[in-house]
Image 1 (cartoon, rainbow, N blue to C red):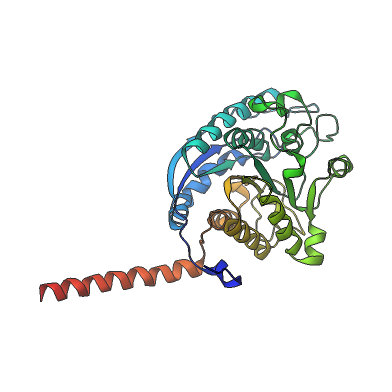
Image 2 (image 1 turned 180 degrees about the horizontal axis):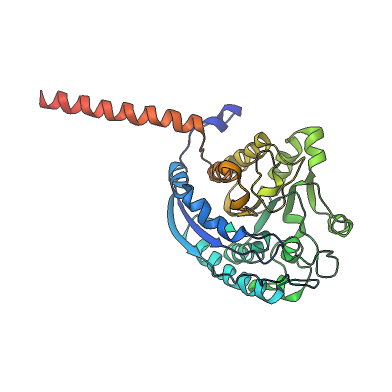
Length: 337
C-alpha cells in the first residue's frame, strides 16, 4: 500500500508482546525519589496503555536495587560498585526479556539504568543503534566529571569509554559504535562532553537545531541511523522535555522539547523504525504536578509502540465500543425474531 503523510494517522494495531523491566535505581543522581517511578507508571495504567496499542504484556520484572546511604557519597564515581552490580543484573534481565518478547520497556530510576539495559539489548541483537533523547549527553567519565554522579556517564561507557566496571557490563567493551549513536534534544553540556562528541563524530541534533529547523534534521538523522542497523533502542530521558510539560523529573529544564515536539518524535520513530525497546528514566513522582509527567510518559510509550493513547483516541474508542455493543444486541434480537 502506498504510504503518504496521512498514513502516520491511520490506526494500525501492531500486536506483539512487551516485557516490562523495572530498575528502581537512584544511586546515579543526587536527587531522591527516582526509585518510585516504575511502580508509579504501572499504577497510572501502563498495562492498559500497552494493551490499547494492540500489544500484550508478557512479563513484569523488577531488578533489586540498593538504597543510597543517608549521607551523600563522595568521589569521582559515586556508588560505582553498587551501580555496576545493578547494571549486571539489569543486563541479564533485558537480554532474557528481549529473547522472549518483541519489545522491552525498561522503567527507571535514574539514567544510570542504561548501563545494563542497553548492554542487555546489545547482547540480544546483532546490530543495535541507539537514539538518546536527553537534555544532557551523559558522556562524562570518572576523569572528566565535575559532580561524580554516574547518571552522567552511561552514554560514554556504552560506546567504550570510561571506568572498566561500567564499560564492560555484559562482557563487551563496546555495546554501541559511536557511528550508530544519535543524540536528540541535547543542550546542557560540559566542555569535555562537547569535545568527546566532536572527537568521535557522534550524530547530534541539539535544541538549537530544533529551534532553527523544527524536527526535519532529527527525522533525517533517524532515517539515516535506522538504515544502518537491524534494530534501535530509544533511551528516553524525560528531563529532555520542558518543565512546563514534564515537571516531575530530577533535573527540570527550561527550553527543552515541547509536548508537540516530543510526541511527534515518538510518533515518527514508532511508525518508521524497528525498535528492540526503550528506557524511560529520570521521573520523580513526588515532583509530578497532577500526574502531568506520568500521563505524558504513557502517551510516549504508546507512540513509540506505534500506537496512540490520547484523549481523542479514548473518546472515539468509547463510541466504537458502544456501537459494536449496540450492533451485536440488534443482531441477537433479529436472530430471536
